[in-house]
Length: 196
Image 1 (cartoon, rainbow, N blue to C red):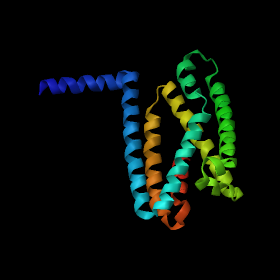
Image 2: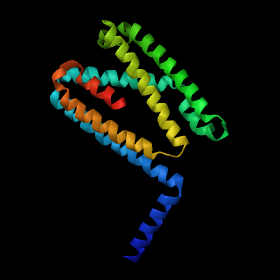
Image 3: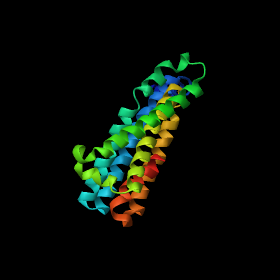
Image 4: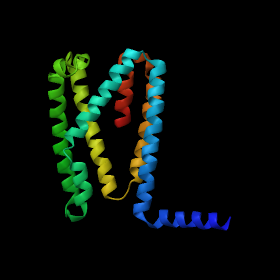
């Protein structure tokens, strides 16, 4: 019993005073929360929507995530690596947000204009301006979200990533259930609300 108390006390002291330990715990918790709520999100989607709608929505989310990861251009790693050597960190982050935002807009436009060749099933996003612009905006927001996670890690405040993932997960899961009347776009609207 005493050994357990000592271990609990040592763990608590590490958590309170060691930022590396604390941020590692929050990042692991964030990954667990994200996985849990993604499971809920997809389970609710599979029950309320047709298989074809779920397939199109998950393919769209996968493409948006891929484009966001390509558009970030490695700046997420650079922010973590060089944050201590940059004097005007806020200006640096703002500049990077602008760069990756423009890159994600260009990447999504290139994907959509070539979607007849890349992914014919997703070419319907080119059929009207609203769908086209929605895809571009969601990709841009997802890219910026990935970058801000790296800023939180660099500043050693990973608790914000944990909080973000909790709110994002709850929003996506609840919105998916509430928007099931919108048929084809409910899953994508729920994903967008989660990102926002």
